[in-house]
Length: 138
Image 1 (cartoon, helix red, strand yellow):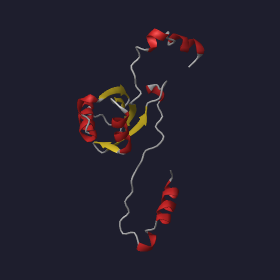
Image 2 (image 1 turned 135 degrees about the vertical axis):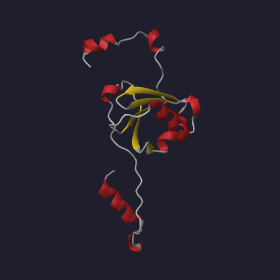
Image 3 (image 1 turned 30 degrees about the horizontal axis):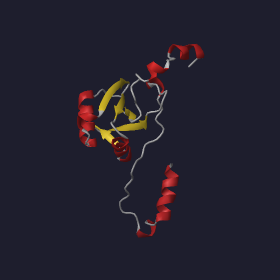
Image 4 (image 1 turned 120 degrees about the horizontal axis):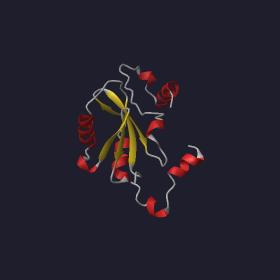
């Protein structure tokens, strides 16, 4: 943002207190090019996360959503339960940061779990699992 553009958003101290607090918020993105029912998404997430109506889920465009929690505990519970899916589409989550803008949000990683069936017994050690993880990437 250029300096003159930043001046447009400059606030005095009395205005700063009126800004909505997003401290306990996540940005989310549904990885799909298909359209989907946004109300169904909100209802499904509330059920999966077991949070009810106390969590605000706002559609902010381009399959992006802003999820506002009441406290750190609720938010951590969702982050720690990652990965999340909706209608077989992955939902990427990222903690909100001050100055974040919906047009330039970057999602860099997602936690995934891999289950390998029929793995020989000689390959079931911790070191081999670490080697496999390293080959797949962090």
